[in-house]
Length: 162
Image (cartoon, rainbow, N blue to C red; front, side):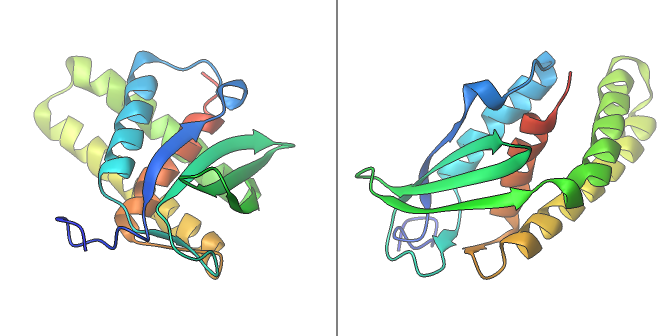
């Protein structure tokens, strides 16, 4: 076990996002993307079902309007690629983007209580996205809630239209 109590053979050690898949994004969105990748690599629980031991690297891309999760070992050996339809995420992502825009506007001029209320809604949608992602990956990749949340942040970053 690692110092965080996580199994070092069931974790991600690198995450990349396909540059061609990323739309132009606001500074706040780019910052969230970088923080999510950093946090994800620092602390995660990630195990492809039937994929053997890791640690693993994950490449994320949008291919033909589908989310592609390409999992490799540190050596570069392919483990599995999962393609997920984004259709189940579309309404949630739309709502998430709207509330994020409200949040970024609010932090410039709203009262602390208004910012907190918007942030609670944002976190609620983020949790809903993490739960949906975990359900879509059930039987494919085992992950914990925090890992699913960080991966949802990256899916949102890929889907952002700017």
